[in-house]
Length: 67
Image (cartoon, rainbow, N blue to C red):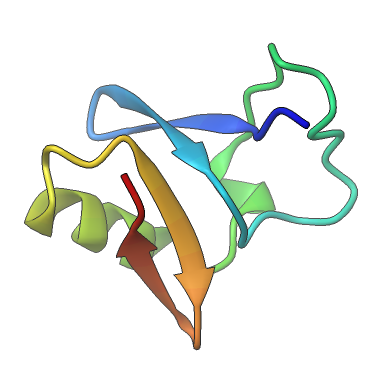
């Protein structure tokens, strides 16, 4: 199953969780917008703190780098 991608701070990253259920994650080319993401501002901050991360997951109310 493919995960959706989003552009964060000029870089495409993979979201493992934390996106709206209505987003069809089965399509590999799906790109989602900030409105479909839980706590989009926190995702921006986490991406700033972890610039090498290519995937993020929403765990216990915060975004954590996964890869």
